[in-house]
Length: 130
Image (tube, rainbow, N blue to C red):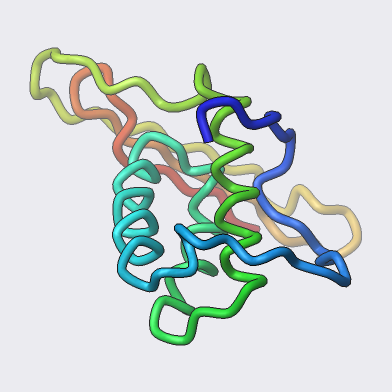
């Protein structure tokens, strides 16, 4: 997949009618190894976490559409090699920040809150919820 065309979206809502077979990725062990390896990439690339989760659910019941989606994800990664959360060597000081807007939604009167935690200069945890 070194010379593949990059994509701007990691998954697809609509699959093509005809999915060509791939002799290499049709081997379940290759598919499983590649999917497991990509799971480690989600540590610095949360944008692919959903796609990897979907692919991981079908490791033992491999169908042509799963191979198609895996290849699509690889093409997305090819086009976004510079994306990601950097992990840098720094001190081990744990720092957290949080914020909220109390009843910020004028219709539902619900609040939006969020936090992020850093270990040194590396972002290790974050969330936002309504």
